[in-house]
Amino acid sequence: MEWAARALFLFLANGKTAGNVDTNALTQRFSDIVAELGLEVLGMDFAPSDGQQTLRVYLDVLGAERDRREAAELPVEVTVEDCEAASREFSAYLDVEDPIPGNYVLEVSSPGIDRPLFTAEQFARVSGQEVKVLLKAPIEGRRRLKGNVIEVNGEHIVVEGEAGKFEFEHADVESARVVPDWVALGYAPQPKPTPGGKKPK
Image 1 (tube, rainbow, N blue to C red):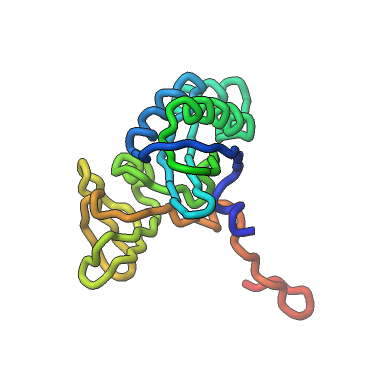
Image 2: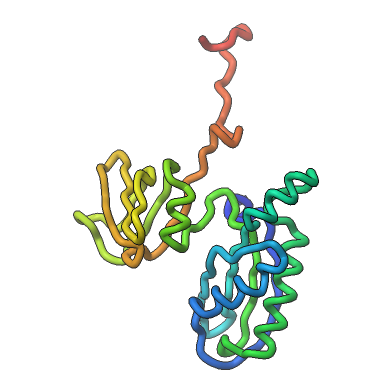
Protein backbone atom coordinates (compact mmCIF):
# COMPACT_ATOMS: atom_id res chain seq x y z
CA MET A 1 0.00 0.00 0.00
CA GLU A 2 1.29 3.46 -0.85
CA TRP A 3 0.76 4.96 2.61
CA ALA A 4 2.88 2.28 4.26
CA ALA A 5 5.98 3.61 2.53
CA ARG A 6 5.22 7.08 3.79
CA ALA A 7 4.51 6.38 7.45
CA LEU A 8 5.42 3.39 9.56
CA PHE A 9 2.77 4.26 12.13
CA LEU A 10 -0.18 6.63 12.02
CA PHE A 11 -2.45 7.79 14.83
CA LEU A 12 -5.58 9.87 14.20
CA ALA A 13 -7.63 12.15 16.41
CA ASN A 14 -10.58 14.41 15.65
CA GLY A 15 -11.09 17.89 17.01
CA LYS A 16 -12.77 21.23 16.59
CA THR A 17 -10.99 24.54 17.13
CA ALA A 18 -11.12 28.19 16.12
CA GLY A 19 -8.44 30.73 15.34
CA ASN A 20 -5.52 31.31 12.95
CA VAL A 21 -2.98 28.59 12.05
CA ASP A 22 0.75 29.23 12.49
CA THR A 23 2.52 25.98 11.64
CA ASN A 24 5.96 27.34 12.57
CA ALA A 25 4.76 28.27 16.04
CA LEU A 26 2.91 24.95 16.36
CA THR A 27 6.03 23.02 15.35
CA GLN A 28 8.06 24.74 18.04
CA ARG A 29 5.37 24.27 20.68
CA PHE A 30 4.85 20.62 19.80
CA SER A 31 8.62 20.07 19.86
CA ASP A 32 8.74 21.38 23.42
CA ILE A 33 5.83 19.14 24.40
CA VAL A 34 7.25 15.85 23.08
CA ALA A 35 10.85 16.52 24.14
CA GLU A 36 9.89 15.09 27.54
CA LEU A 37 8.89 11.89 25.73
CA GLY A 38 12.30 11.64 24.06
CA LEU A 39 10.80 12.66 20.71
CA GLU A 40 11.17 15.52 18.26
CA VAL A 41 8.82 17.06 15.72
CA LEU A 42 10.45 16.97 12.30
CA GLY A 43 7.74 19.20 10.88
CA MET A 44 4.08 19.31 9.96
CA ASP A 45 1.75 19.70 7.01
CA PHE A 46 -1.56 21.53 7.24
CA ALA A 47 -4.14 20.88 4.54
CA PRO A 48 -7.00 23.40 4.84
CA SER A 49 -10.37 22.42 3.40
CA ASP A 50 -13.99 23.53 3.43
CA GLY A 51 -14.83 20.03 4.61
CA GLN A 52 -12.26 18.17 6.67
CA GLN A 53 -8.91 19.79 7.43
CA THR A 54 -5.83 17.73 8.25
CA LEU A 55 -2.90 18.58 10.50
CA ARG A 56 -0.19 15.98 9.88
CA VAL A 57 2.70 15.88 12.37
CA TYR A 58 5.88 13.85 11.77
CA LEU A 59 7.84 12.54 14.75
CA ASP A 60 11.32 11.12 15.22
CA VAL A 61 13.28 9.83 18.21
CA LEU A 62 15.84 12.18 19.77
CA GLY A 63 19.46 11.04 19.76
CA ALA A 64 19.77 10.53 23.52
CA GLU A 65 16.51 8.59 23.66
CA ARG A 66 17.59 6.53 20.65
CA ASP A 67 20.82 5.60 22.48
CA ARG A 68 18.86 4.70 25.63
CA ARG A 69 16.49 2.46 23.70
CA GLU A 70 19.32 0.79 21.84
CA ALA A 71 21.15 0.05 25.10
CA ALA A 72 17.94 -1.43 26.52
CA GLU A 73 17.41 -3.45 23.31
CA LEU A 74 14.17 -1.59 22.62
CA PRO A 75 12.91 -0.37 19.20
CA VAL A 76 14.86 2.77 18.31
CA GLU A 77 12.35 4.05 15.75
CA VAL A 78 9.02 5.76 16.40
CA THR A 79 6.46 3.27 17.72
CA VAL A 80 2.67 3.18 17.83
CA GLU A 81 2.91 3.97 21.55
CA ASP A 82 5.02 7.05 20.76
CA CYS A 83 2.40 8.29 18.30
CA GLU A 84 -0.43 7.66 20.76
CA ALA A 85 1.36 9.45 23.61
CA ALA A 86 2.25 12.44 21.42
CA SER A 87 -1.27 12.62 20.00
CA ARG A 88 -2.76 12.83 23.50
CA GLU A 89 -0.41 15.68 24.39
CA PHE A 90 -1.04 17.53 21.13
CA SER A 91 -4.81 17.13 21.40
CA ALA A 92 -4.82 18.51 24.95
CA TYR A 93 -2.86 21.56 23.79
CA LEU A 94 -5.07 22.11 20.73
CA ASP A 95 -8.25 21.86 22.79
CA VAL A 96 -7.05 24.67 25.05
CA GLU A 97 -5.31 26.99 22.57
CA ASP A 98 -7.66 26.57 19.56
CA PRO A 99 -5.08 27.41 16.87
CA ILE A 100 -6.93 25.77 13.94
CA PRO A 101 -10.18 27.13 12.50
CA GLY A 102 -13.07 24.68 12.14
CA ASN A 103 -13.09 20.89 12.26
CA TYR A 104 -9.83 19.03 11.76
CA VAL A 105 -8.16 15.64 11.87
CA LEU A 106 -4.83 15.35 13.68
CA GLU A 107 -2.48 12.76 12.17
CA VAL A 108 0.65 11.84 14.13
CA SER A 109 3.11 9.54 12.38
CA SER A 110 6.68 8.40 12.02
CA PRO A 111 8.56 9.88 9.04
CA GLY A 112 8.43 6.61 7.12
CA ILE A 113 10.94 5.31 4.61
CA ASP A 114 10.65 8.36 2.33
CA ARG A 115 11.01 10.79 5.22
CA PRO A 116 10.04 14.42 4.59
CA LEU A 117 12.68 17.12 5.01
CA PHE A 118 11.47 20.33 6.62
CA THR A 119 14.73 22.15 7.46
CA ALA A 120 18.23 22.62 6.07
CA GLU A 121 19.56 20.79 9.12
CA GLN A 122 17.47 17.78 8.13
CA PHE A 123 19.01 17.92 4.64
CA ALA A 124 22.42 17.80 6.35
CA ARG A 125 21.39 14.67 8.26
CA VAL A 126 20.85 12.83 4.97
CA SER A 127 24.01 14.08 3.26
CA GLY A 128 25.02 11.67 0.52
CA GLN A 129 21.52 10.25 0.18
CA GLU A 130 19.19 10.77 -2.76
CA VAL A 131 16.31 13.22 -2.33
CA LYS A 132 13.51 14.63 -4.44
CA VAL A 133 12.77 18.33 -4.12
CA LEU A 134 9.90 20.51 -5.30
CA LEU A 135 10.93 24.16 -5.56
CA LYS A 136 8.67 27.18 -5.20
CA ALA A 137 10.08 28.60 -8.44
CA PRO A 138 12.07 26.96 -11.27
CA ILE A 139 15.88 26.83 -11.33
CA GLU A 140 17.22 26.47 -14.87
CA GLY A 141 13.68 25.62 -15.96
CA ARG A 142 13.16 22.94 -13.32
CA ARG A 143 10.94 22.89 -10.25
CA ARG A 144 11.36 19.18 -9.56
CA LEU A 145 14.87 18.06 -8.69
CA LYS A 146 16.22 14.61 -7.88
CA GLY A 147 19.75 13.86 -6.76
CA ASN A 148 22.14 13.31 -3.89
CA VAL A 149 22.67 15.92 -1.18
CA ILE A 150 26.35 16.81 -1.60
CA GLU A 151 26.58 19.99 0.48
CA VAL A 152 24.66 21.91 3.13
CA ASN A 153 26.11 25.19 4.33
CA GLY A 154 23.73 26.99 6.66
CA GLU A 155 20.55 27.39 4.61
CA HIS A 156 22.37 26.77 1.30
CA ILE A 157 21.82 23.31 -0.20
CA VAL A 158 23.51 21.60 -3.15
CA VAL A 159 21.96 18.57 -4.85
CA GLU A 160 23.57 16.67 -7.72
CA GLY A 161 21.87 14.12 -9.95
CA GLU A 162 21.65 12.95 -13.54
CA ALA A 163 20.31 16.35 -14.63
CA GLY A 164 23.32 18.13 -13.11
CA LYS A 165 24.17 20.10 -9.99
CA PHE A 166 21.63 22.50 -8.48
CA GLU A 167 22.15 25.03 -5.69
CA PHE A 168 19.32 26.67 -3.78
CA GLU A 169 18.33 28.11 -0.43
CA HIS A 170 16.07 26.18 1.88
CA ALA A 171 13.58 29.06 1.70
CA ASP A 172 13.16 28.14 -1.99
CA VAL A 173 11.91 24.63 -1.14
CA GLU A 174 8.20 23.85 -1.38
CA SER A 175 8.64 20.24 -0.20
CA ALA A 176 11.32 17.56 -0.09
CA ARG A 177 11.61 13.86 0.70
CA VAL A 178 14.28 11.19 0.89
CA VAL A 179 14.24 8.70 -1.99
CA PRO A 180 14.23 5.21 -0.43
CA ASP A 181 17.21 2.99 -1.23
CA TRP A 182 15.21 -0.16 -1.94
CA VAL A 183 18.34 -2.27 -2.47
CA ALA A 184 19.78 -1.32 0.92
CA LEU A 185 16.38 -1.93 2.51
CA GLY A 186 16.20 -5.39 0.96
CA TYR A 187 13.10 -4.63 -1.12
CA ALA A 188 14.73 -4.67 -4.57
CA PRO A 189 13.21 -7.26 -6.94
CA GLN A 190 15.25 -10.44 -7.26
CA PRO A 191 16.26 -11.73 -10.72
CA LYS A 192 13.99 -14.43 -12.11
CA PRO A 193 15.54 -17.89 -12.51
CA THR A 194 16.43 -18.91 -16.05
CA PRO A 195 14.86 -21.98 -17.70
CA GLY A 196 16.28 -25.22 -16.37
CA GLY A 197 16.68 -23.83 -12.86
CA LYS A 198 20.03 -22.17 -13.59
CA LYS A 199 20.70 -18.90 -11.85
CA PRO A 200 21.77 -15.94 -13.98
CA LYS A 201 25.50 -15.16 -13.82
